[in-house]
Amino acid sequence: MIFLPVALVFLVVAPVLAAQQQRPADLIVTNARIYTADQTRPTATAMAIRDGRIVFVGSERGAMTFAGSSTERMDLDGKTVIPGMVDAHAHLVGLGQTLRRVDLVGTTSYEEIIERVVKRARSAEPSEWILGRGWDQNDWADTRFPTHEALSRAVPNNPVYLTRVDGHAALINTKAMELAGVSSGTRDPEGGRFIRDNEGNPTGVLIDHAKDPVTRVIPATSDEEIRAATLAAIAEANRWGLTGIHDAGVGERTIGIYEDLAREGNYNLRNYVMIRANEATLDRFMRRGTQEALFDGRIWFHSIKITIDGALGSRGAALLEDYDDEPGNRGLITADLDMTRRVAVKALRNGFQLNVHAIGDRANRIALDIFEDALNEVPVADHRFRIEHAQILNYQDIPRFAELGVIPSMQGSHQTSDMYWVPARIGWSRAQGTYAWRSLLNTGVVIPNGSDLPVEHVNPLISFKAFVTRRDASGFPQGGWLPAERTTRQEALLSMTLWPAFAAFMENETGSLTRGKYADFVVLDQDIMTVSDDRILDTKVELTVLGGKVVYRRRT
Image (cartoon, rainbow, N blue to C red):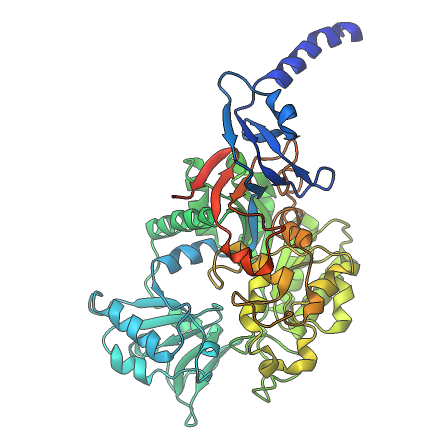
């Protein structure tokens, strides 16, 4: 081995470094109002980008030192720039499939749902399944669960499967019941419930695992359909300013399709994939190990997703006490808790993060207990285990998140969708521990924000506004719902940028507009950090940029 004198090494290396530093930027952004989400430089007016990463953030004078003859210049005429927004709890393929199925979001009556299904049935083949998503009986004048009779009369020849907005319940017609073998003699499965009439006959509403006998007989989605749904969902995400998502529960087959698309260069999103599988599949992924920034930072494998209860809207969320509007019902535990404990220990031993869906206060306590037991067995300081949703918390459990190092991954838009009927479900006393953002932040945790799309609308600014105001799009209620739990605008911005990055072990690569990180940013037509509360949702995304490349441009 030949050792060169230090002085000679410097003479060789220094010119190379100088040349790299002087190599012109590919893109310079100027005349902008930039919120960086970087506390060392909170605002700026210009950026320089090279090879998909930021090489400078600051003044126009500084950025222009990176200009060359081939450098593209983007003068934003004073428009606002924020880091690329990240939805920290989403279902990408679910969004793509929703775009291709009967859209029931926003329906205000059972009759309207039937009208939309009948319209779809007119173009359907005989016996073809009709699939839809988005109904919510809480938005109807009659907030009771529907029964299948009217749907079965309107569409007698096609099996119909309509998923509730939360994904934890479904409505089917007689034809679907016949094909699935669901009858009065069918027993409720573990972690599921068939809603029944007074004679014990299924009404057509299936809660959580009661959906399984029906989904098993629905024709499987082809790889090509999953591929098309993925591409459609990515384009829709980009349209609303999303450059990343945390994909909450993805199976092995879909992961393979994601990798194929990314390998082809057709994946304009950074996807932090939460693996959903049985223990054998998880063991295979653990042997494979965590993988980060695959395919130029498009796909990341570092986490596992397990669902341990249902949803509040369908009364499947697991509660410590009965539902106020259904005495005797405390919700459902939908996972094998012994298996969940084993997975938590395996995750810690293999460097994986475990993300547990828990909505009810009982489910959250169970998840925290499992995490605590696993951490006692395998002490790990920086595990970043997460609870997805954490919607209803007993006050005794709020400090445990910080004590255990657990991240509450929450969705602002759930609060503004659910606030109208939450007190009826659980009473005002328990409602004080719902969507407890400020109480959690005050303990020292961070809260990555999301939408649970397609459960809620894709637009991340809905959750941004919810964090800031706890009011819906119309401004209701005046002063905000449980307003003491509001956040600041800076916290709301971090909840969609740097905090999701931290929650995904990606904070060194993305989440803020900082030198060395990916050049992921969004150009907005107005300043969401200063505009009045009632104008936040008027904001339009002008450009979405991923790795320095425009992936969405608003048409004017």
